[in-house]
Amino acid sequence: MAIGRKARRKRIISDGSIIQVSNLIKKFGDFKAVDNISFSVKKGEIFGILGPNGAGKTTTIEIIETLQEQTDGTVTVDGFDTLKNPWEVKSQIGIQLQSSNFYPQLKLTELLKMFGAFYDTNVDAEKMLEKVNLIEKADSYADNLSSGQKQRFSIATTLINKPKIVFLDEPTTGLDPQARLNLWEMVSDIKKTGATIVLTTHYMEEAEKLCDRVAIMDGGKILKIDKPKKLVKDLLAKGFKKKISRQNATLEDVFLDLTGRHLRDE
Amino acid sequence: MSRQKNKLKETNQIRAYLAMTWYSLIAQTRNPATFAFGFIFPVVFITIFGLIGNSTQTLTIGIPDSTEPNQILTVIEEQSYMKLKTDKKSVLEQELVQGKLSGIIEMQPHDVTITTSVANPQQAQAIESIMRGLIDETNLRIAGIEKPYLTLFKKELSGRQFRYIDFALPGQIGFALLSTAIFGTVFGIVYLKKTLVLKRLFATPARPLSLLLGQGTSRLIIALTQTVIILGIGIYAFGFYLPHGFQTFWNIMIITTIGLIAFLGFGYFFAGLANDENSAGPLVNLITLPQLLLSGTFFPVENLPSWLQPIANNLPLSYFNQAIRIITAEGGSLGDTDKFIAGLSIWGILMYALAARTFRWE
Image (tube, rainbow over all chains, first blue to last red; front, side, top):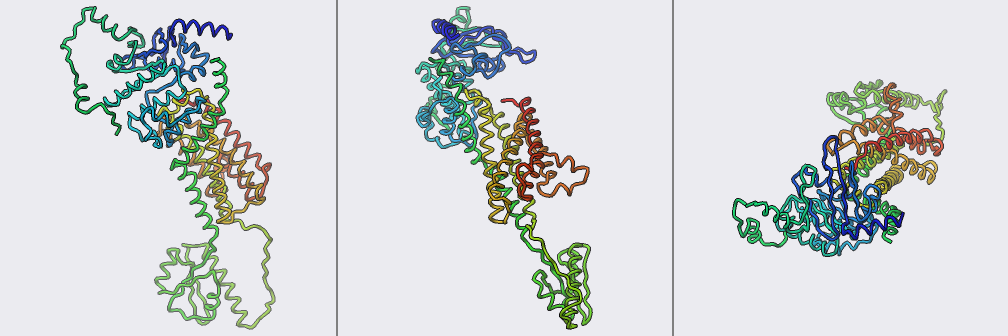
């Protein structure tokens, strides 16, 4: 049994993928939220799942995280089947949910220590808060943070167990441009530690800047998976032409030029 | 090697349990609702009930300023439980009708007239019999009879005076327990569900059972602390009596623990039914308010109409209150409460079974 798993793990590692999703189906009644999708995520990459609301992004990511069970198909995370070994999977991954709320009436340091105990690891809470630029909020309750601060704190909690894979579900939704830039830097920093990152987003700019590969989903199906640059190239090769000629700057560049890039929280 | 590490992680749920217990306890002590319902309300009630029990009754008697005093007045003035008030007759009569006076006494050289009102029937009766006694005594004294033919002696069997606080205090332990176990749990968990905090916690390798047990344990610690504080105030401020000292104290703690575990079942069940605070409020009131009124928390079940008593007597809070009263007021042992503990356990098991079916993480 142990040898069998070892062999399987070896195969997966040589294959270079850390997550494998095969023929995944999730039904809610008659509605197919996820309709027979297969893909794999390579070790160390940032993998983006893009799509409009209701495309099935969150359902897919939550099945990989073991928070939901699939109707059919298999998912392996770091060699562990999510249905057979959910507890092994949970201990290998870090999760940021779409809503970043935390246990009420606990200070940030206490929350980090509590999560540390749940992952059975010791946490240097101050050091973690420094990393996400929240040390001056150490004694605040999570409820009193701004949305950008909450997202940063939320990311700190995903790193507690030094996870092999970090899942970020719409990490920048609702953030101002400065906070978004800051979060992008944090995601790049996590990648530098060797972790694999899976994120969902509505923002194409975000996907283009951060993701090594993206899967574009709609109606529970994956329409295309590839590197962002390759996807753009393919589209152009089909003879696509943008109607308005490309500007060298966008309104966002104007906004950032006027208001600066430094982070605001209040 | 990594597999071995995982195995180790899987078995260490104790740490997750202890952490949940500790941090849930810290969070609760910072929550104003814990203090309001669990500590302040019961303490205020105990204080009020304690004061009711301690005040000796006084009778206020009006004497019209037009009256001619005779010997009976000096006798009345000697009675410490009688307060005298002099005013115009019309004013006094009005106060009597309003129930502010127990009676009006008018004196002629050889007559004493008592006026009472239906506004205060009990005091009317008391004042009539007291005045009869005082007049007889005065007559005998004036007649110079030192040793009357018949004398009434009163003897009291030694025993404890049963006061309202002896009834009210066990009910307050129950009230505090109900708040912590049901209000606290339902609103707490519904909030955690709605904000997806619970989902985030269950995304960690800590097992749901470890986390729910940890939450329950922290509520148990709060409930036991409440019980100790309520008992402490009752004992030291109002002379609440523990018949067998520490033995009685430990028995109360044991019954509190059993009661909390049973009521937590209600909490988890209703937390499973309610989706948000708006549906939680009415649900919680639906199970707690009738129990507070019917289970002998503020007044005895015997005061209820007879058809309601069988229902009232079998409510979980009734079982709890009755068990505590057997231990305290009747000086009974744990064995004497077996019926009620069994009843509480049946309610508890039923609720946990229902909770297991309704409970959802989100």
